[in-house]
Image (cartoon, rainbow, N blue to C red; front, side):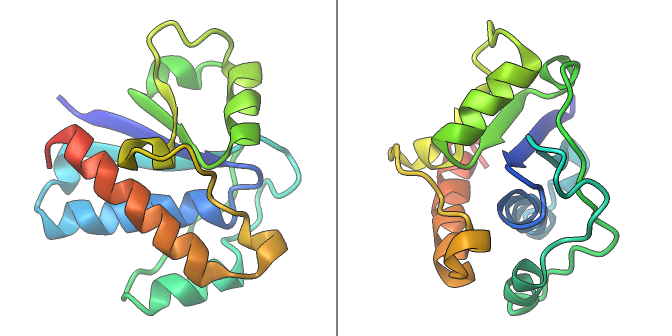
Length: 151
């Protein structure tokens, strides 16, 4: 069975693609990339079709991760059925995810840092211009997600 995970942020050009490609890299290193479908989406329409933000591209490149071909895509109502987990970066993302997908009866919608035992939000580097802090927070959340998934 393939586990399907979707990372979500406001525009799908900074935080969620960073999480998507970092997690794909973790899975590749563990030889688990065939057992997971990992994607990312936006809650807004502002960046649809745009490539990953250059700050995210530059930060990922420091670790040999390349988000080639990724463009922003909006979350849709049917995604609640498609994914096993829909993971937002901050409280506003969580509210907007629920607004888009409707009721979360199966508790699929979670905030990334909740997997590390924190309720903090991951700051949007679009505003902070701090891609290092965003990377570190996403890594913390992904480490917790890996523990949660048992990988």
